[in-house]
Length: 119
Image (cartoon, rainbow, N blue to C red):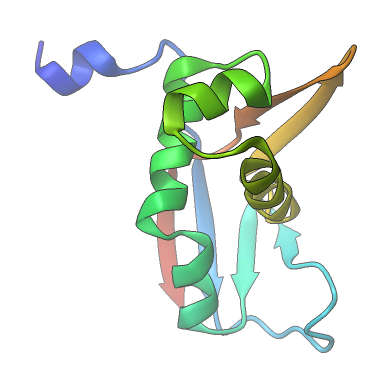
């Protein structure tokens, strides 16, 4: 067993297909997520959403399975309002699920691995 295997969560990571060049008529419209694939209009938009920091955040969500944004904030060193904005953006792309449980918001990663297709 390798060190990376020891750190893996028992939850299987889900692949998410990312298509670059998918058409979005209205840039203010939410991203198109169809058949598990996310359409990005440009490579730069994909790079912004799947930045190193955001992918680290997805892995941290998978490994920690935090019970609140506050708990996640303590582990990643980011303030809750900043985390909340990032996670809501990622939720719009189908990468994260945010569930309200009582007074807390519980984040979970919906995808941690990606297959990029250029259209």
